[in-house]
Length: 135
Length: 135
DNA sequence: GATTAGTTTGTAATCATTACAAACTGATAA
DNA sequence: TTATCAGTTTGTAATGATTACAAACTAATC
Image 1 (spheres, each protein chain N blue to C red):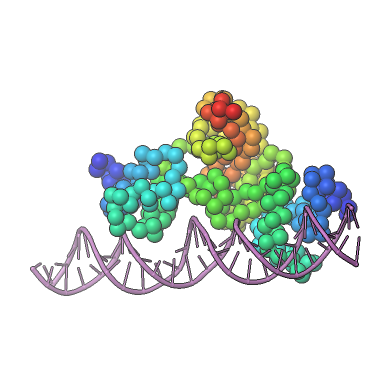
Image 2: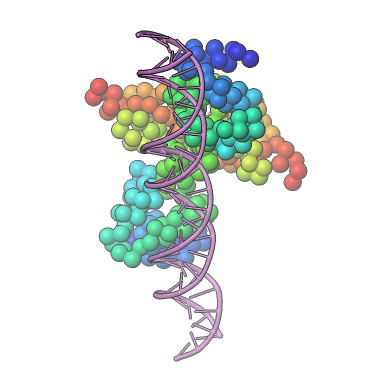
């Protein structure tokens, strides 16, 4: 499991125990956890863990570009270690968030011709397959 | 100016003075105001206005489908009365939000084939034309 | 004019996030 | 080994947006 540590080092982040655990958690739990779920999940293994550390660590990850924050719904920020371009679908019934691939070519109008676009986020909302079948 | 009142009525909203003013403000200020800017802008005309009323009213507008909330950046919810499908570009230099048209055809991968997509939001981030030229 | 439903208002509570300072850790140098 | 120092973690307190709630108000109806 030392590859996570190496990965952090490669990205200019000192691989402390907490940071390794938090990044591992992000990688293993792709359902876009919140700060709270990360904290609660890791508190068992790291009893001294502080929520501030979770916030700090996630901020470092984002600064260094190895994670991103997504605000799918107001007032719940979620975190994601999958950095490929992809979109997020949120089911308004079961609240589940589903990733999907996106092809951004040619969707943007001329208004942004001379703009530098550095980051893209596509959010879709509706009813997922499972909830549709159940109703 | 009574057409705004009629418009609200058509959408099942009793056209009170506050509601009319708030909706007018949304229509005239397309830069995606926050609750705070709406409140501050209207407080002159309506000295008794309460921030709670702004929150309540915007919630009603959203429920009835004549406005939408966008969370371009964490912890600042903005409101928009333009309900056509469009994207939002936020310049990370000047913080300005620019609307642009979007063609969503064919961008979504197969993962969502059996999903009902009811709402779409596309956010782009980067450097706008003006800031690019200035640097 | 009385009643009632709906609307607005202000205050207090909530809750996520941030600020900050103290405690801790681990490496390096004497 | 011990001292030092930068970087990390922790806990508490502060902030700030949003919500809950109850009282005051308004407008329409009987």
